[in-house]
Length: 130
Image (cartoon, rainbow, N blue to C red; front, top):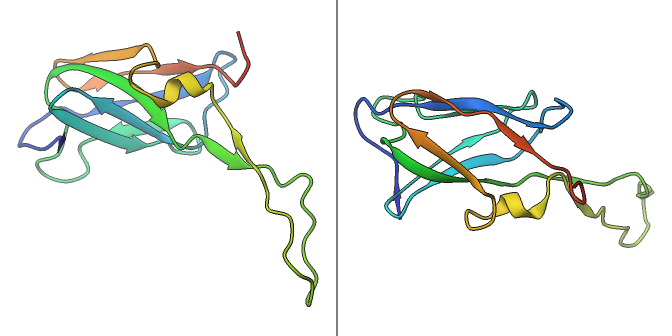
């Protein structure tokens, strides 16, 4: 798989949020074709940028499958801090922030056509949300 690169290629920007407008605060948005892949980190405000960070990067024109990885957080609500001298503590479980279907290009149902610099906003569902 090749990573997107080349002079003058467009960048893709957008937001990732839930249906109520709350931003997804972490993860990575991934764009993929059979020959190219590009990704951008999601900020705490739900924004992402793919390309444009250095000369020559960007997203070549084409139709991309889009998916999101790393949208997880630690659930520390039931974890008690250890005191000095205690043995192993409870490990905080990881909680999924979005429906698992968004984690794979085959199941996300998200596509984006890039013709030039593109704005692509994404709405996701929480786990178990219909």
